[in-house]
Length: 76
Image (cartoon, rainbow, N blue to C red; front, side, top):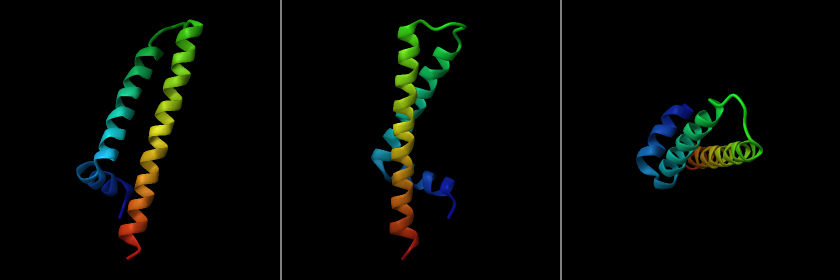
């Protein structure tokens, strides 16, 4: 089973995964908005780094849930 298929299943069945996807997408939009600026103030640069870290954390959590799904459903 491909990761995309697992993601679809998890979006439908797992509230935590669905929430992580939504939060990740919102952070992506915030980052895109910040990246439209030509120059960033130190505060904006700090905020950009903070958003990137949050986004990475959410992505890691989603990857962990995908791994758990694979272990519990595909090794039986």
